[in-house]
Image (cartoon, rainbow, N blue to C red; front, side):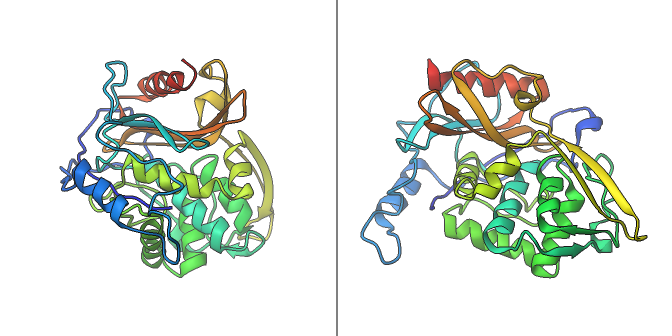
Length: 322
């Protein structure tokens, strides 16, 4: 996979009950223009192949960019994976804070390079004290498999699970962040920079709607990833640090999958990832399919609130079937 991106962020007042993290405002610069990115796609090539850099991907050009007054989020896009077609794109290269959508990359690294049967002993690094941070509830000394941690990461959006995965795979959060950034470059997501595996706000932690498409598109190639994001409730048991069995039930946060919002007619949600912080606003990336089994990736970044997030997502999903 290959691509690039960039731009802005701002502060939105949201209920602290829904925060996965929080940080002050920081204006992100946006040095890339459509012409520069398009030229790069056309000139670059896949190593060892004659195809163009983006031969199997959706490419956003200036002509593709759209405006729609019903799409009030800062950035949004819909990508047709079957035809490599961009159905809609608003500010696809704007550099924004991704909140917990970050976990898509964490999950990708785990399924691509990790062993899901590995037993992981949770370290004290997984203790997250930031107010409002979403957790799956694991504690230092607990023993879980990588597969269980992935469910804890993606279903209840456990920041603690993200750190446990990072430390197990790379030895530290910093080293895992380097893995994330290396993978982003491989995918062409050059408007992305990660500093942690969960998305708690940091001025140096950002991505774009287009880069998120590249990351999510790569992750969908793995059946394990599809299975996990398609789960709305996960029940599991693992060994606690005191040697006793811990029983856990983790529930998903995607309103289309939980029944709190109706999916547009003609579409089925395959799964995805939500994210919310004060800096990022309300965000969602997900996969869906239509009645002919064609698949799509849709992303909304920096919506005003949860209700507005799903209003925006439904509005852009309707462009698939209209």
